[in-house]
Length: 369
Image (cartoon, rainbow, N blue to C red; front, side):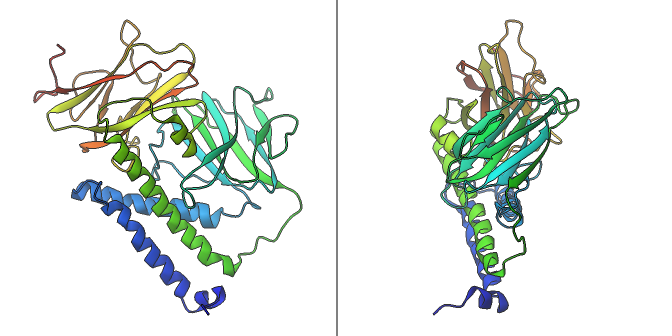
């Protein structure tokens, strides 16, 4: 018979298995589809450390759906799946077995949504939608306060649906100007009788292994996506929207997603013929691991507030290693390839996005003809 959970803790076997599993998770960075440069490998292994931080938060510190709390699977230094630099993300582990209440004040970000999901990157590689509510459908008091009930059965007022297999909650708050817009203030609680929150030693090993499974599952999922995007590099077609939703996407967003790759004397010109009057948009660059590039120090994304439209209402963005003298220039920050994503947010139409690679001179300019 195998060792008991208690014995594996006492003799250190549980910890050693966690360490061995983490070592195996590193194979995602070494897959044959990944770039073989010291720079990309360094980012890849740093990515794993970031995923481990997120995995420990989600699978250990905030794992119990009886005691929910908001944490972040993506922020300035933890980045997953073309995370949006314009977003503040919040996550919570919940369960369809319970009822919850979210308290908050709205803030003034242009977009706020709450979505329940089933599955997980640590289990089946999905975050399947099970319910959604957003600022367009919520009732908010004059002082900006609101409450949302989260449950499987419909309830009066602001109600966010779950299903019996719901496992988590994702909050997206999208800003256009973080310097002036104020974030929402949010808290979540389970409704019902109090329960014992003491750490269960027999559950620790399973939690640690789920954290590593999150690292491996997340890393491999998005390497798979980048392998698929190799079929249309430097283009921005509409992605498989069902795939995006299964991975945790927002129901109000239409995703145009691919990968970019540029030589030292090349630039990517992106042209959008028109911007819909309703809704919003943004565009971002990421590295090969689908981590948004460092938006704290570099210009790597654009939205309606930060971009400049052409006189005819069209939009031109240029991705280049050096400043081409274009208003909507995005930096590659030392990368020669990566992921990219154009989001149409709450738009009824999704105009086609034209792209072309141009040769540039030593000054970063190219012949517009």
